[in-house]
Length: 593
Ligand code: GAP
Image (cartoon, rainbow, N blue to C red; front, top):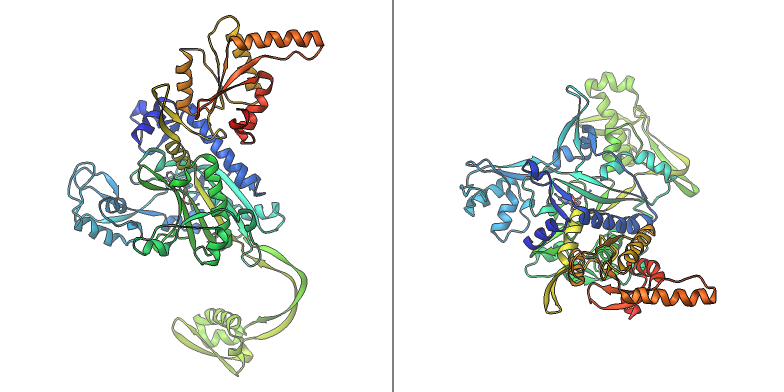
């Protein structure tokens, strides 16, 4: 990790923010290389999860009024376990201390009192000052950053801990844009904020980080994913059952096999695991250090019925890069309850249906005097009973229970009736399938998996084997030497490539070997060198073109590939298309040899 952090700092990938003022833990700035890599990862995500899936993207505010999080459950349930050192006052994630010092892998699923007991049993000490932590209480700590809207006491608000709530709260409008047709997906790439108790490992546990989230709204009865499109993907699955059975490792199954064997319990979840795996491979996560781990029952977020984490191995630890969760109708039902808006969609039947509708319309002039203050509750209980068990109204009297007390009501006073009605459709609350990615964690893992040391010309070299699509710079352009017109030609070439939207670095300082090493270290997949042959080829071609009256062509350059360090000679005129194709994966360097 230190090698990566050192490279990230030196080469402008990322570094701690505000160091001039001592910095604040958990905040990172992406330098020029890192910002470009991050942008390319986000573009690849947008291409896969928005464009190719036929979804749309929104951009909601990060400051969110308190009632949203009251409804979503974050105000009550978005906590981590904290233990404070009695000597130095430093706060620590209690479950992480236990996990680091024992075989326990899921301490966050334990109640706080049990974690406090484990801290005492394991004789744990404060990692900062070494003081004894035994006997210290373990508290739940809400991770949201609190703020206020407007001057004075203002309106209580929080920085969003997930972008997802933006999609849920705006659902009543978004469903109109989707013309009330399920399924439809809404995505967002933006920053989330969590006041982590102990931020660590740079981008891996930060307090402000970019998330890329898709909320797919589906009709759970009808909508099905295109499993054929991902039929050949082998998913490395570490189910909750395997985690609980000692010594069992993960297994490879296709989405259909995982569903048939009951390892994954939802087609949409299986589909997005497969789409995600292909995407992680595309952006440079090493598939030999990658798995999907199912959440254990006690680990599930308050809103999820099932969740699988995409995890990458980094420095011996498994790091969660993405969660694919089935959020059911939890969020939309909560917002419907707490607000005045309609969070359902109207599902039109193919043909109108005649259905029996049960109604109760109690005679309050009877219920009032008979049941006094309990009359309204008795009326509600009658309504609920009629929906659940209409046979209860078959006799002369029906009995309901309110606050543990039984109340008998003559059926003729309940206004009970069963009528046949014709309905053209029904209101359904969509279910939500959510693939949620941490962009910083993806960037970090891609860097960690791409960083290699090898030997070139008897010299050790550090090389970032980033896929061309996400590499910050696509091509380095160098003159062999800045003389005899080579510098001029190289600068013109760099300007021309930039004008065509290609990321270029121009470098004419130091010997050519050093320049190659510099680009290898920041992951530039290709380098182009203008040499004497470039000038000679150019002159020869121009002479022959002017004799034949053809459009004058430029000369040739060498094109070097980062990983193999092999070089081929290519025509300058072909370079823009060639580089675009190589970046998009439409051609490979082997085609040019
Ligand atoms: N809307 C669902 C949601 O928020 P999550 O698993 O809490 O789910 C999504 O977060 C992703 O955000 C995680 O899979 C992880 O990659 C990333 N993430 C979470 N906390 C993070 C942190 N403190 N620093 C960096 N990334 C984080």
